[in-house]
Length: 190
Image (tube, rainbow, N blue to C red; front, side, top):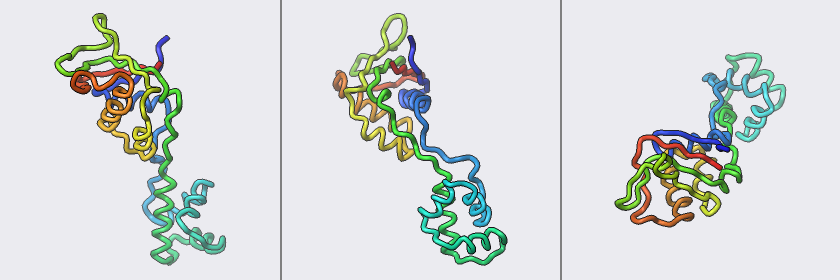
């Protein structure tokens, strides 16, 4: 039975596609588009998440003050409060990534596409050659997960760390390192 599969124009793109199908990445909520402090404050005060963001950003005012601000968009408030509201709004707009689940870190990976080590370059995962099989449980996922949680796991970073921290940990350096110079990859998680 086939497992979830990621596809992309590079190994890193296929890995990111696979990971995003398994767990929610860090992302910005599309509903957070207000520019003016009053609209931002109005939006923040409609949810518990928004109130928490205001508190975390350091806004400590009375309910009466908050009501006064919300009742008049032209209310004159200090610049420092506007900065706090803006910071809270930006923080509330970002949804943190969910940690990479154990089944992903312990999974068996089948990589199809062009694989090169030293002078040996061949298409894997077709009728003539089995996919490159990697045991993810032997690798060190710490740097991959750190980048993922920060929202900074680019395709190139993922590919580099997957090679160095997962592939090499499982099957070694190869003849002269591992390269994935193809233009199309699929990665199946089993």
